[in-house]
Image (cartoon, rainbow, N blue to C red; front, side, top):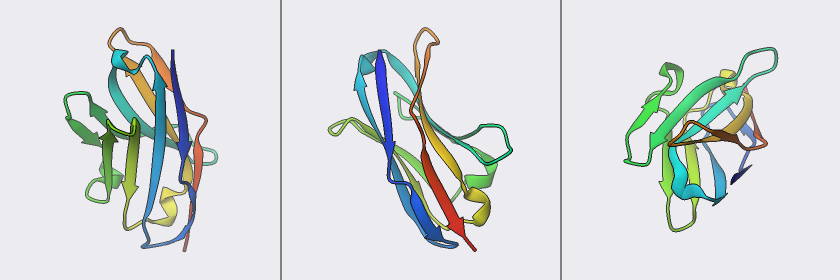
Length: 116
């Protein structure tokens, strides 16, 4: 089992920055891919960024150049640094972990609101 707990969400003005963090625990040695997703009101959950345990990253086009995913192995966290935030970035942000054998684990989400 893997446990994921997000934190760091909040309200920020457009153009500002915010860092959300995902505390990870449990059998994290089984994790192959870490990811951040988001879901805006009335919309489907969408991919924001992923990182493999080998360090390869991938980003959705709307956030490329503005968001950075990283993992702190000492603190057992997966972070998402968000810069140049836009109102359309407003959503609940979820942390996801995928094991080598394809099982997904999700956190409970953290709200990010960007005011114009």
